[in-house]
Length: 133
Length: 68
Image (cartoon, rainbow over all chains, first blue to last red; front, side, top):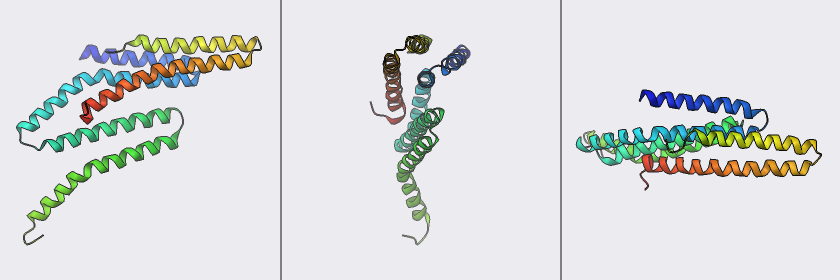
């Protein structure tokens, strides 16, 4: 793990210096380098993350938690990461309005994903109220 | 790491070479050629970026969103 963090930091520093060099001549290609660097760092941390998420899934299965909840939670994390990624890229290109629209869309999608869980919660609370519906 | 630092260097190299060719062609007075070179270099870089971004999105889908 220590070796890997050194790799990621070195990778980021190399990309940063390259972007500083290219930015003078071709800002578009500098943006492309930033995009590729972000994607690669994420792909790099994906393998350990995947095993950790599988462990969480297995543990929740053993604890008898409905798999739907964990799945929804992971989907929300995925949506949040994707929209954050896109918004940062748009913000790097000085497109503040597109970035905020992407973030708005991500928030909307997360609310849509969370509605079923919220519904179950409301139903549980209503069932707990004596004499309620 | 599925990709390595070489891809970053490739993209940066394309950027520097394209900028150099652009300057040379501009000095020679061939403005339209210089613009075409910039455009083609940008398309090549965009293709490489699109490949990696596609890979990233597929990975996010398979890890977080449980779709294949």
